Image (cartoon, rainbow, N blue to C red; front, side, top):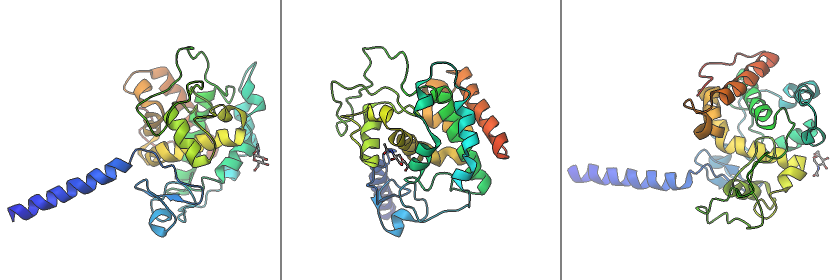
Length: 268
Ligand SMILES: *[C@@H]1O[C@H](CO)[C@@H](O)[C@H](O)[C@H]1NC(C)=O
């Protein structure tokens, strides 16, 4: 018996090891494939059914129509807050968001209709904060010595003449995110990161890709968990209280606009 339970223990360790090796928040599936709850790509019910994270998932659990919530008025309400010289004003459009949404049909589809609406509120709260109300396309004041290249990701080698600073609605950053997003969305993320600042459809796709890959699964734990998933190491646990508060305020404002309660655990 002792031997048997030791064997079971080892088997469990091996299985956990195999799963953990693939769970890197890196669900770079082809366009026709689903990303399963374990971050594997495939087209059958195992991948596209229950727990499916992105791609053509077959599970939808509420009847929220995202375009009906993200109305022209709602979207322009954010854009109109942008003051002064704003490159984003002639770049970000609701049409580009809706185009990107077609590739992520599980966005706001988990849980109840109210859960869906609060996920939309959370997404746009982070977008509003990250871009200064859709004012900025590219990260400002990046030191010229910083290329945001992390060489620990051999699958996503940096192009030495490119820089991987923040771009787009959620300010996609780092070679490994550009590489993985490019693979999933089908653009040359490593060779042409500037695409995220030039093509609004792709720009919104990178934001929804990041959201569905790294944030969506935290939504049910409260808004604070989504802050942690986006910029936790720099803001949570008292590191940058004012940025956390800014995100929370936008979230509460959008929840009010959509007529849903913001829920608990707002901070991180
Ligand atoms: C962006 O998406 C819209 C709507 O699907 C489409 O009409 C437009 O051609 C796309 N733009 C680019 C640059 O692909």
